[in-house]
Image (cartoon, rainbow, N blue to C red; front, side):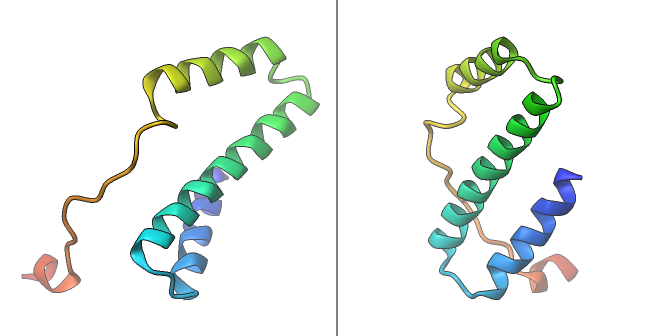
Length: 83
């Protein structure tokens, strides 16, 4: 279910014609918000305990997923793929 939200969100963000940097930031923010919403929903249904949530957040921060910048090294056009 979350994959369908990611795809729809990416299509919407591309449709509003953001610059590349703003598109990446918007996708990161959308991902963070949907992750928090999913965690809240799981906690409300007693699937995710507070301890599990804290452990998950700690491991995520320890891996640096939220602290390192995302860089794009190369842009590939559709023309180069079809050749």
